[in-house]
Image (cartoon, rainbow over all chains, first blue to last red; front, side, top):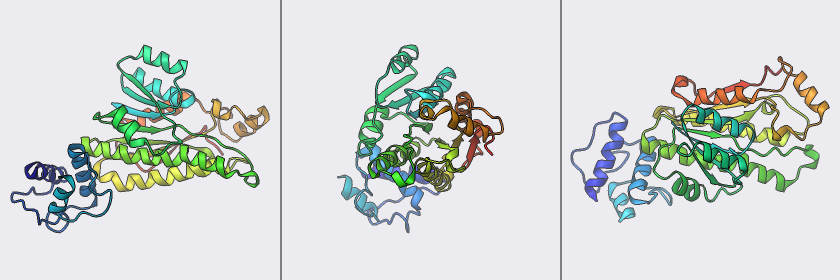
Length: 73
Length: 239
């Protein structure tokens, strides 16, 4: 699951012309560490929903990679 | 190009659907009921025209019925928000139920459809085009159309802001501001009302439905890729 999420995060980063991640851990913050802005987070939500059927932002804010993994497990 | 169009069973929506189909595009049409016209389209364009019944009063089932069941994982390149109710009366007679019902169909459900259209475009990386059919009544007052015109004004504001919010992702949003056409929507007008309305245009006649549909097609396709956040008037030069 971690690999798939890393792949999705990197797809979103690539689509915005941003540098992709090489290291990956659950404490990474989506905005401050990965550099996502609100449009990136929207695309991330859509891509995760297409893969796992869960809208991660539907009921509150998600700040870290670990929180995403908790929602989709 | 895959185009999602609401209100395809008659009037402008039907003409728009045919305009895309004749050019070889795929049309995903919505309307409340399956009419003879829908059956004919399904027969004539078996691999190009897809249809499902949806009542735009219902804003709760947009995701499940339209996007999961009907569209599935196919990319949508353009959404044409065409279906609308024209509730006309003097403001002093305003009925809250008719008003809410009209806002559901003209504004609230279309906004929720746009939510999922943008999500679809993000998933597929589509530089898509969202088109709302607005009305000249939002710009030039007509007696009895205040409530209806206000729904179109809402769409124009929503469209402008959609363009601003999603332009960076290559998603465009525009309104086609149509003048009065000879469709079922304006059939309740008396001949005298009609005459007065047409006298207020430069061309002194009803707006050609095909001209509106062709403009929609132009704004939907790549040739208009620098046009966004605009209201494009197809109104016979209303004065």
